[in-house]
Structures are given as structure tokens and as C-alpha cells.
Length: 267
Image 1 (cartoon, rainbow, N blue to C red):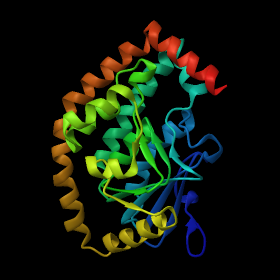
Image 2 (image 1 turned 120 degrees about the vertical axis):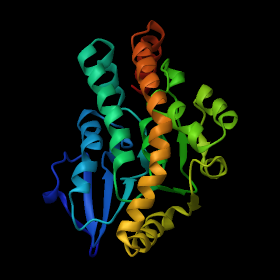
Image 3 (image 1 turned 180 degrees about the vertical axis):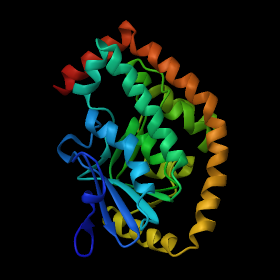
Image 4 (image 1 turned 120 degrees about the horizontal axis):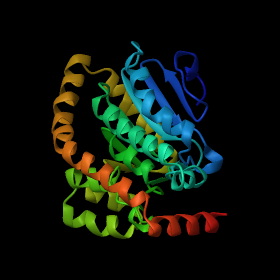
């Protein structure tokens, strides 16, 4: 982010794991743990739940781009953090509450949000991407929701939203297996809008953001609000059931065994 793009951190109360940069009316939110493939730890999770109200309060902002630093969009939950949930019920329940807040805040957020998916978007990273209004993907990126593979119900992930975006029959196999959905397949399934080359991803996102920023603001916001009413109404029951089911599976022996095995493998 160079040239006229300046850090807007002084306007926001956020940890360094999530940065906000500005270029006129466009805000670029960067998931900023590149050495960890932007895996979500506790400070980043809190920031993702709280950044949306801060963006909405930024009176000069008209469009938001969400992307990842480095070579990943977000590789999902940070294993060191997630392992602590096994024996800390309070931390586990707080993570679920914040997870619900992330989804609710994104659905309520009044400005258009463009995802620039520059690499792996896994677990929560995948959910963040598909909750955006327009999803631009690098040709080398992929989506995946591996909740089931680690013994969890995908309550804050694909089980809740994918059936609203793509036929249920097409999404089941990917949810059941956790397999990667490569960028062309993501577009075919309706989980992404279109592809770009890796080098063109952010320039294309900025061009589109500029076009949207020039649209009549009230008409654009009102259109997004009406569209998202369908999502919010359809998601309300699924989200409640999903988070409850995920909470139950967080306490199972199978989840503990699979998570610890994955942590040892990542080692």
C-alpha cells in the first residue's frame, strides 16, 4: 500500500493484527499476520468483531476492501489459541459470542465490502470472504471449511451460509470433507464473483471500489440493506442452531483428539 494510500490507524482502535488504510473514500482492511498466514488469534478475532462499527462511524468512508497481508487471505483459526478452548470454557464461549458478532456486524454493515481473496481462505477466513458483497479471487486462491475434519459442526461457517449462495447438493461434499475449493470452482458454485490474476487482484478491487464510491450513496446503501435482509432472515435460525451445535462438538473427545493431532503435525 503505497503512494496516496495512507495508514488510517489513528482513526481506529484496533490491534496491529488488523490494519485500516485509506485512499480517499475507500478503506482497505488488511488481515495482518502474514508470517502466520493470517491465522486468527485472540486479538485479531476481537478486531474482526469490532472493526465494522468503527468503519461505519468513519464519515468519509464509502467502500471497504477486505484482504490479507502476504500470501494468504486467512488460514483460519490460530491453533495455539484454539487449543486453549479445550480446557477453558469461558474462552470457548467468548469465542462463539464474538464469532456471532462478526457475522451479525458484517450483515448489518451499511457500506459495500469487496473481498480481495489473495490466497488461502480457510474456516473463519472463508466465512469472512463469502460474507462480503463482492468476492474477487486470485486465480491461485482457494476456499475451504474444514470444521468437520477437526470434529466440529460448521456452525459459524459453510453450514450456515453456503446453502444461501449455492445449491445445497453442490456444497455438501465440500462441507463434509473439508476439501479445497479452487478459485474457478468457487466462482462456478457462486461462492465468489469472479477471478483475476494475482497481480491484478488489488488493482481490480480498487477500480471496482472507485466505481462504487461514485454511485449515489443512499441508493447503494439502501440496495445493500434490502439484499441483506434476505440473508439475515434466512440465517437467524441456522446461526443459532449452528453455534449451539458447534459448542457441543467443542467439548467432544473426538474434537480434542483431532485438534491436538493437528497441532502436533503443525508443530
